[in-house]
Image (cartoon, rainbow, N blue to C red):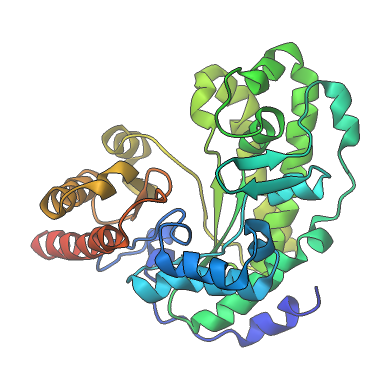
Length: 347
């Protein structure tokens, strides 16, 4: 990796900073919107690209020019306010020595899982994230230039607990709660693994910002299954540490820290708990993207009224499902624009 630190100074000026202003709590003329998994299988152009090049999922992730092209596909199609680099949270387990692949019809396949603490010895604990994940950094730099200032670019990582769950259970769903069993049966070894993942995530996020990422998303997609007590013990401390240490390392490198986001609870209690001085993101049910046009638009309007139009970034509660009609994604994005501008004008 030799390009991103010299090329970042020449990035094109940003023409749409709406999501950055919302994240900082500055006034916005409308609600910014982007989607988790906004690039991928639901887009016909993604399928055509994959078929044309006859490549697997991680082949595309690890080829910067391909990752760049796929990142840009939804930006060309929809009026989105941010792009998110095409990658996967499982690149961290990969660099730690776990073989991971995505097989059509079978999903995520690991070459081995962590069954007992003895398996922690199999991990490459000294793996250099900055070297081993240079392809992600190169893709980010390339994409920043290709966006030509149209909108900001997200980098991301999985959170330690979610990564731990995948490394033990093999996915986000498992017939047996093996990862949660670790927390009870092997609490000290669980903390050891979570701390290792925390360290790698911090280095990874810092590297993405150095490469050109303007916002960061930390996906703790599996946190909801922990319950309040286990979340407070095995997830929240590491999330706080990631936020603090990422900012600290960027400042040490004389780089301005970027906004960092994480997910998700219902809109009303979320806004009530957070108050008006915290920027919130979410929270449209992805299944509502199957709705008829009027139902979809009304649901968007309700969501915006609940969150308010300031210090708010519209998104889904999770990702776009692979069989969603892209036209409905466009309806969602356009409805966020329309209703947030309408509500702003009337307030």
